Amino acid sequence: MKHIVLFAIGILLLSCGKKQETSHPTEGPITESIYASGVLKAADQYQAFVTVNGIINEILVQEGDSVHVGSTLLTITNETQQYNAENAALAASFNDFSANQGKLDDAQLLIETAKNKFKVDSSLYFRQKNLWNQQIGTKVDFELKELAFQTSKSNYLSAIQKYKELKRALAFTSSQAKKNLQISTNQAQDFTLRSKTNGIIYSLLKSKGEIVSPQTPIAIIGNFKDFVLELQVDENDILRVQKGQQVLVTLDSYKKQVFEAKVTKISEIMNERSKTFLVEAAFTKAPPKLFPNITFEANILLNQKEKVILIPRNYLKNDSIVTLASGEERVVKIGLKDFQKAEILSGLKATDEIVKPK
Image (cartoon, rainbow, N blue to C red):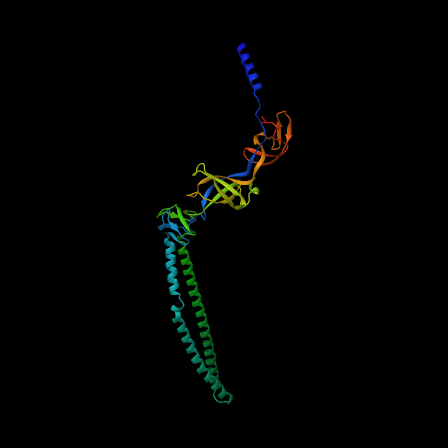
């Protein structure tokens, strides 16, 4: 029991004799920055999708191939669409206006026939009318000639109207068939996937014979020269980020190397799930070789000063109070801060000794 008491007293004396950590203000440079992580993307990088359902018939490119805007990547087959295209072509040919010229010629011939009969009946009618006015002939003869005249006139006008209606109907049917063929042709183009940018095929996600839909990514395409740094910046820091600010980047693929970049674009909307804003940056001098989707860490530089008074940041309480060796607590004015140091604008002298808070 006596040994236990002596051991406890020894520990107590040792702990009482342990001194608190102290420090003095120092002079040096400081850089204030915002930390962000992100993923490297090729410029104009995108996932290629088809706009229709079908089966991949032929793939015309390989991973690593260079492509240009409009380059054919693959073709898709769909029997229903193929039949629709054939039907549209047949309908357009059958209903072509020039192919139905014979119907108009027949209608025109009917007009000429009705016109000639109308002329004859008109001449007979007016001749009979003159005779009737002279009290020559019978009333029955006059009425018969008048009836024939009116009938011929009606038939002639009807033939003209039918011709106009036939011509309008043929023109409409022809135009409609051509429009349907155009729609079918445009839909057929949807079965050919083309590149939307100049770049290379980074990845092909599907193979020949696979079924694809508009929800299925087919390939990843992007620029092979230029890359974009996509940073995720916390909502608490976004107001301090501006275009043109310098960014120091460390890539997992290039250990112990720091690369410089500049902020080029700041998203106007926050990602509700991650509570971050997308900020884009471009290398001022890029590494010799890069690949899409490489992860990185970055610091967006906000401000830099070369010769300022600094103290360790963990010596601050509430970011505004320090404790002197005498036990006095003093309010200080803070300037720039990084992860380890804080600039003292006022409240401390170089000779002051400060104590690290417990």
